Length: 260
Ligand SMILES: Nc1ncnc2c1ncn2[C@@H]1O[C@H](COP(=O)(O)OP(=O)(O)OP(=O)(O)O)[C@@H](O)[C@H]1O
Image (tube, rainbow, N blue to C red):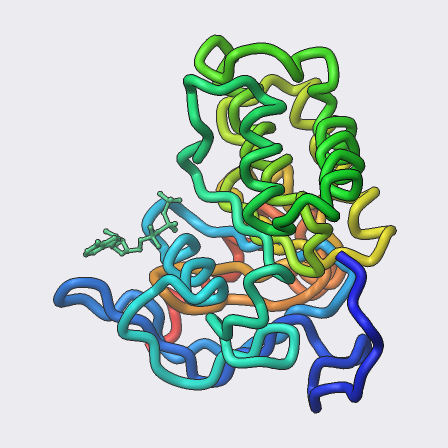
């Protein structure tokens, strides 16, 4: 969407981090799930959020997009408090469950969400360009007229990703986008993430597959609601003298467990 240039809100400039968290906690039901996290996510890079199932990755992502209740501490996203209405068009979020209408075609789904983001007859040409670009990005152009209900699981999750790409968000938050995908599709999606980052998009992507960690510019390693590390894959391997990020992670887990 074209926006008129105006005075910049403090903290929203391109040199500020995309995400800045200070003593961030979240409580789900009776349990504290995030325990005072401090971290930053730089702009225009792919940051991987990695850790075992149940460690709090989805909860952290929900806090960042503003859908998590009972969050304390400070959480700034693109220079504004997480969940601020101005962030709605700037942040794309793909959950683990594909959120598409199964009785519509792929293009109809995208047309529908594009109309919500950028409504009105005068915007119709812009919406069409946006939908075509999103379809090309996720490599679903040849399936544009297929009913979403007839797609495979991997294709459906790419439709969800295409919806999140509408409006060209500055920050993409992706919750395990490669689960259940074959190796070729996983590679293609990671190539797309790198293309998007090269175009300036900030990507926060969760995974519990450690080989995907090597493809990220930076990593947040989580365990039981705490951050074990916030660094580049190379620095993690070097500081722990480990050949892979997976072994670096295990080294950090052992060190954390040994600390009284
Ligand atoms: N609605 C809820 N009520 C109470 N506890 C919850 C709720 N949802 C999640 N939890 C708990 O919060 C913790 C963190 O869950 P979360 O979904 O953030 O983990 P995760 O790292 O994303 O896991 P996975 O990789 O399996 O998706 C887990 O222990 C989970 O059982």
